[in-house]
Amino acid sequence: MIRRLLIAACLLLLAGGVQAETRYVVDKIIITLRSGPSNEYQILRTLPSGSAMEILESQDTYSRVRLKDSTEGWVLNQYLTNKPIARQRLAVAQQELARLKADNDRLQQEMATLKTTGKSLGSDYAKLQKEHKKLLGEVERLRRVAAKPLQLEEENARLKKRLVDLENEHELVQQENQMLRNSAEREWFMTGAGVIILGILIGLIAPSLRPRKKSSWSSL
Image 1 (cartoon, rainbow, N blue to C red):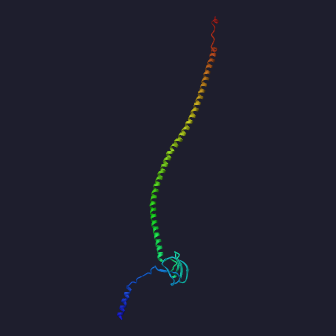
Image 2: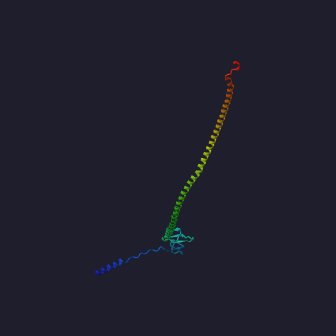
Image 3: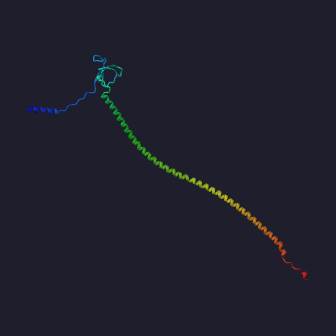
């Protein structure tokens, strides 16, 4: 009895130590396209899994289908599905993944290009700011330089006006001097004429004012 138990325990240990191997059903079968809805009809061709077809008529076991090349026939319903097989979906997913990876690589490259362009634009912007500041300084300098001729022109106009005013004043002074000169000459002439007339009058009056001398004959 003990021996049997030991043998059983050894068998259990051996069974527990052996790992079960996992297998999967392959996702690839081949079905037949027949000329009628049963196994008795002629096989027109074999169709690999994933073949697309249009359902024209459906019965309990078979469906009448049309292939892409317009070939018509009957296939078992159990082999038909309204979704692509896993292998096809995997291929589509792999294509999409490859496209996304390519897009990601392209975007990464565009991002790197944009970063480089951004740095270049930043450098160009700094240069433009510096050039703009320099141009502003040059414009201010030119404004100051341009203001000097304007100031000189204004000063020249003011001096010209002042010169005209002075010429007018000089002309007025000359006219006044001429008038004063004429007035002085008239006064001098009148004074001279008065002196002459007064001298004549004195010359006429003076003899009559002298005392007459007595005649020597009257003393005899």
